[in-house]
Every structure is written in C-alpha cells, then in structure tokens.
Length: 268
Image (cartoon, rainbow, N blue to C red; front, side, top):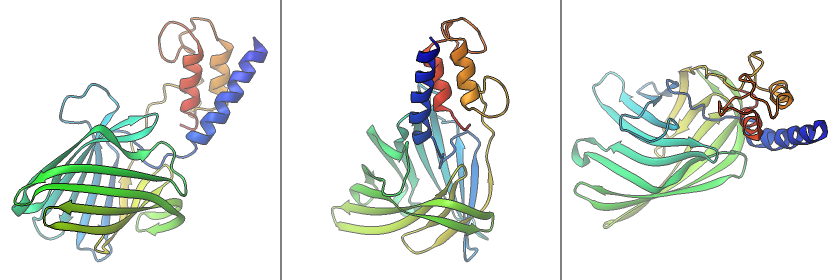
C-alpha cells in the first residue's frame, strides 16, 4: 500500500506541476482590472461576474469589459460568456456594442471556442471563428489567430510584472462588402491577469489598479494556507477510509478522485 501510494503521489505531482505551474487569468468572480490608455483619454475596466442568464454549472463566468472615453458619456460594454474547465477557458457567447449606428451584436459559439487554453506557454497557438448579423451590413464572419509570441517584463502604473506572456491577436473580418485585418496584443502576468493591451489602432492600455478575490481553498486539507505535497500526503494516508477531512469531494470515501482534486489545485 505504501509503495502504491508513493507511486500515485509521484505521478500526480509530475503531471500537475506541468499543467498548473502558472495561472495567467485568475477566474474568481469579483476580480477586477482597470487599464487606462497612455494618453489618459480612455479607461477599460475588466470584471468577472456571475452570468445574468441561467447556466447549468458554477464554472461559468461573464467577463465584462467596459470602455469609457474619459470626460464624456461615451461608453461601450462588451461581455463574454466563458466556461472554466480542465481544458482552459471556453467561449460560449459574445455580446458587443458597436455604437449607435450598428447597435448590439450577439455572437454564439457552438461548440464553444477556446478563449484561453489550459496551458499557456511561448509558441502556443489557438484560433477562434464566429459569425454574427450586423445591422446595415448583414452577415459578418470574424476569425482570430492567437499566438504567445514573447515572455516580457511589463512596467505599468500599477507596478512592474515579470515574465508576462505577450499574445498576438490577428483578426480578420469578412462581410459582403469585403474584408479587413488587424493585429492587437495582450499581455498577461502570472497570477495577476491582464496588465497591458495594444489595440489594432496602436492605442496602448496599461494596468492602473486591480482587485483579486481570494479563492476558497477546499483542498488545503491541513489548513496551512497553501495546497501542496503535504495535503496530498495527508489525503493519501487516509486512502480507502471515510475520514471527512480527507474526503475533499464529499462522496463518502477517500479515493483516487480526492487525490486528483488536490493535485490539480497545487500552488493555490
């Protein structure tokens, strides 16, 4: 039993450390990031909220991005319905405000598109493709190719963030009247999230403030404030029992499912 438990712990640690080493987009509801353009003319506020609509899982979030032109009443609100899972963040729907002429556009993805893959690293590439009907224009197809192109330190008014991933977003918009292309960039800091954004019009937004909600830690079995090998060892020591503290998924038995859940949340 001891030999088998040690083997299980080793395998879980190896797989988990690779997949969950860094979190580039903390997903707790209430997380907020405020970015302002370098010229001080615009502000973009990112907020993770509980979806207004009914969804079947607590893993869903609404990412709301409100962009304001400071000193005026001009404001655009774009929302993204995303699902958090083992394979990353999946995008189910976008609701975008395109101004008084084109109105509000809704784009749904079925199956869900990749918003951010589970493991982000240099060279990672993923694509998104969607369609929507736009007033006065008709059907519009939007595709984007996302690639992690660099790892950089980023200096912002909110501080200096090391080892940020620079993501290049190449977007193509196709309609009956023709097509257009643009390239934008986003920088994500480890365990912080978005810290910088450069639009296709070369407007640069930098992080000025942020609020991250401290997540609950149901897998911190020994209650020392961090989920690590000590928690995994404690659960393993009660393997096959009904110990309620080690039974982290509350199914009545301490088994491999409890070990996997603790391992997947390492570093939390």
